[in-house]
Length: 209
Image (cartoon, rainbow, N blue to C red; front, side):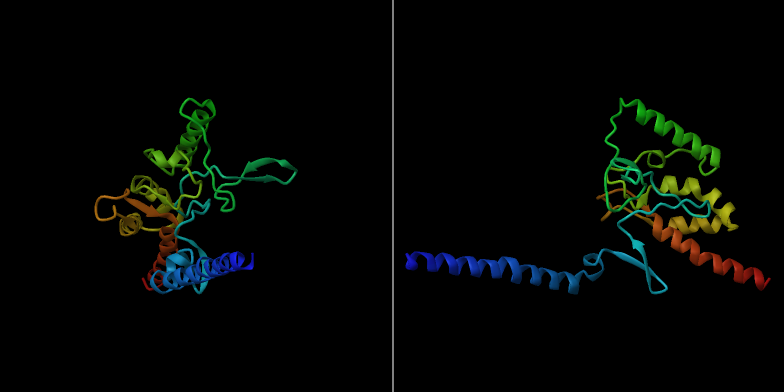
């Protein structure tokens, strides 16, 4: 009996050490050395503080910033744990709306979103991602069309030159990988951080004029 159990126990211990310890540690080490930023969540820092991740969208509400794609994520209702409430860009609960093209709720929500964007003067044309949610609810990027449509309102709200804001959008537009994979996109967090960096320049130049 012992002669039969010994090989089994040895194999369990050996493969536990290999697949449960050695392999994960080796992969983690390679990832930290070769792809440190990606392995640590693609975090973005400003003044030594983490302000977000380039992979996770945030809910920007100020007119001075570019807005991201609508989010359908939710969170438990504080008043009733059995229910949920809307919580845009809730990173703890990635989810889409799961509403189909025949859903009246979807039609009503998109229609109200379009009306709200026009009423706020934020856009003069409607890109699909301006009024529809993504599958994750945490999309960090928007289309160049949506970003460009927001330029006039963002420039006006922030007291910035529209041409300079337009240039920022163009600078932060990422093209298809090797010209084939994916779609052109603009990372909203990185673009808004560039806006923040631009404002001190504007203030400084006004003081010297």
